[in-house]
Picture 1 (cartoon, rainbow, N blue to C red):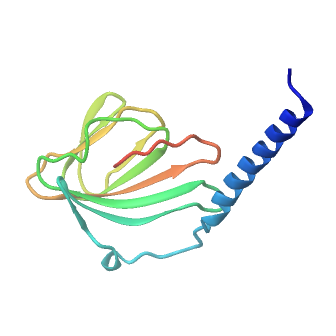
Picture 2 (picture 1 turned 90 degrees about the horizontal axis):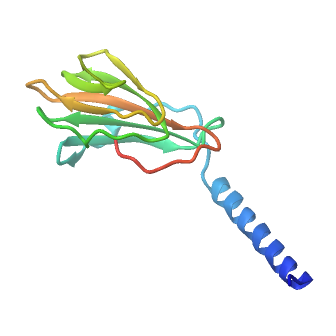
Length: 151
């Protein structure tokens, strides 16, 4: 039989948990209007080429907004085809890539834009003879469950 003491302990535990979650969210400052200089980012070597992390932060309207720049060596892909709940947009800066969109492989070059919808299988690979660089912009809408993914 549930006693008043059990209900009190459960209520305190729930309140403490909610307070901890709210505090954790409050610790991350919202990203204000910002400008990011290409020369101020560092290219971190990866097995497929390199990655430049530009920002990853909550904003006034998103739980998280993230931008990174990937450079793929010829013939390389950062990972196998995958899907995740976040939506993302990629903008090709240079090179020739092949991307999986709606079950179809598309070949694209500089200036091309790719939108990957939530939970849709996608991939990207450098099919050119020179490095291919693209910007990735990914967002997490409020209340959306997020899984960790690499692009």
